[in-house]
Amino acid sequence: MIDIHPPRKSDHTWTDFFIHIGTIVVGILLAIGLEQTVERIHEHHQLVELREGAITDARIYLRDVDQNRDADTRQVRRSHGSHTAGSGDDLARSPAANESSPLMNRSAERGYTARENACSPYDCW
Image (cartoon, rainbow, N blue to C red):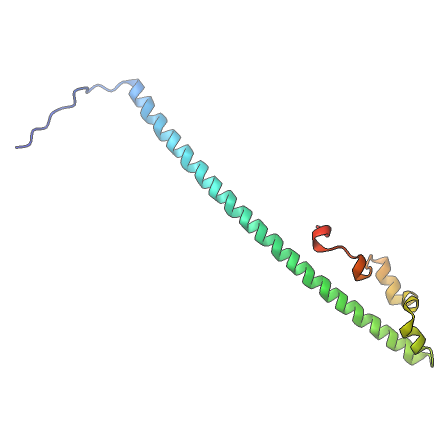
């Protein structure tokens, strides 16, 4: 037969109770702190990924703007060349002639500059 002995110290004191509660509270605080640390690291990785995506999108957008501006410039050159006989070659060779076109004036008013003078996505953010 199994002998079961009662514990030698059967009375529980308030000190034992508070030590037990304190141990539980410290364990819960450690668990919450670790969870928040892991969540913060995860959010940081998401933020880095989001910034890289935004920079990539900005580069694509700037490339599209450059292509559209180049296409518009070519169209303006062609339209000036077809309306004025003999001056189409001069217009195509002269970069200053493009500055007088209405399209180029509007671009300058809106802040669009030549690609060399435009800021990179890192500088604009």
